Image: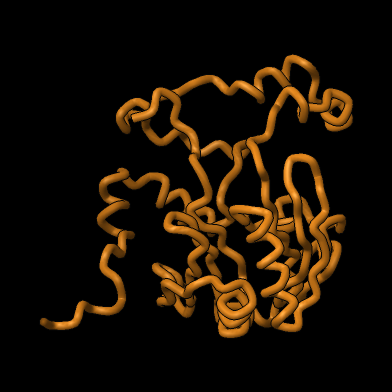
Length: 233
């Protein structure tokens, strides 16, 4: 176990869709992402969950519920519409995929254009070079390539941070979070505190889930078996 536990990457990003087939076709054909899973969403009646492979340990995920197609899309509220557009707090402003080299970035631009989809760039942002385009259902998309890791000493701009209320002490703390190695699973569920962030489930159901011992929830809510059974030898 690491001496400092923190997320090490993106396992998957999940985006809602009212047109699962159309989204899968776009990401498979236009971007070349392999469909690796599609199944009834665990614990969500009527839901369909799909995964497209970005790398061995990173996927792009889609979720479709029976009522999704009827939800209105409003540019400037539900969707930003472009990289400089506005959207409601907590929503995804844009999604940037990774390319492994500048040659791959240009090849992806070629692939996207060859499918009749408009894409512009690259644009050099210093920390990365990016191309920009749109996906189905007003997804705002980017592919970016970086030739080196971000150097915080050159990119932590105190004047920009001050505009959102971040002072020098805060900046120092954010740039070097306190290390934490975990406690072997011994930390109990804290009491429900409405001042903390919470999932927007039915409150009674949510509190029932929080009250379950971790081992009981594991047994009740896990779906370890793939939906397709192995072929008999």
